[in-house]
Picture 1 (cartoon, rainbow, N blue to C red):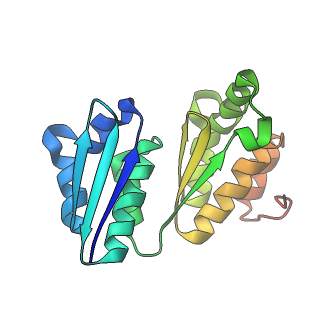
Picture 2: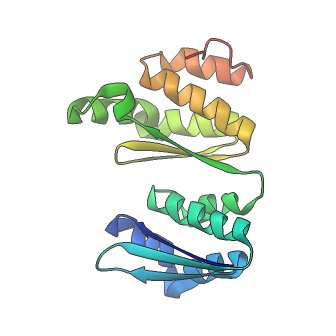
Picture 3: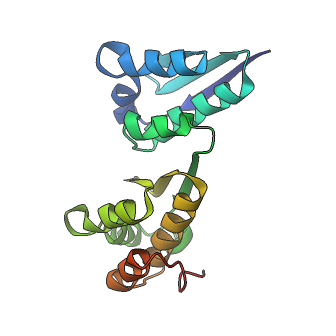
Length: 176
């Protein structure tokens, strides 16, 4: 079996995908048995897989996660068979207003990154706020808790209430 997929990632994320001297790209290729071709001028990434379809699919997820602002180290969590990647579109909560999107991004990040850091610490998930999206990587239960907390913030819930529920280990009150 041989598969190929072309992806576009933002130009400012190409360097993170390639890594110093190509180390990140080579590591992804080695761990997934894929070949990754990067067109830096266009931001197009081609992933070719031979053999294991699951590893090929994982390589695509890792590249997409790096493209959505995750560090390569956090994106590599997706190589774990059980880890998942969720993407929340901020526009789903705000409409297309750039000011509203910027405001909601700020709510998820928090002052000096405190909101994002608290959600990551309390859930074990990794969060990236990039462009008009919030990406979450982790085990299914971690991602579910983080997704509920992020969604609550995007819907206007108070930070303290969200943090309190997370610290208690409760997802009650996060029903959306």
